[in-house]
Image 1: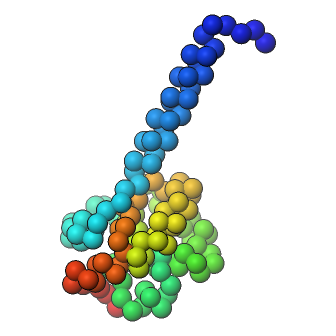
Image 2: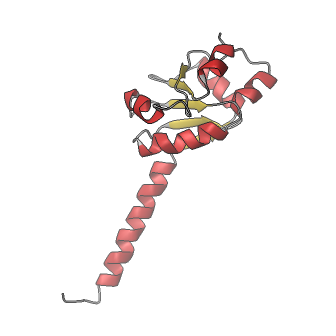
Image 3: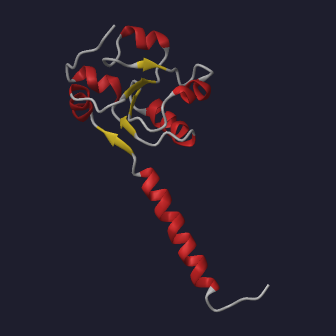
Length: 134
């Protein structure tokens, strides 16, 4: 293999391109607050999926309007999320933001990139007096 003076520059450009790609991908997963999530639900973008990753019992006790339940710790979570559209926006939440933060990583690995993570969870939603469906 013959080395040239340009090889270090090619490697540097390749690394820069990789960093830009990873940064652009990560930028589509965004933490939002409760009020921003409420505004989003008042005027939902086309195809919005509201994803509750709490247990079925927590979901039945009250969930965000229009939410679907896929229990993060319930077993088939990685299989269930395969049914989600890869290009649709996903409003993701749990009780306090911990499970949904972990679930966000799983969604990203599955190729779902347009994630709006309600970082404070449904507990903060309730604390602000916002409505839940049962």
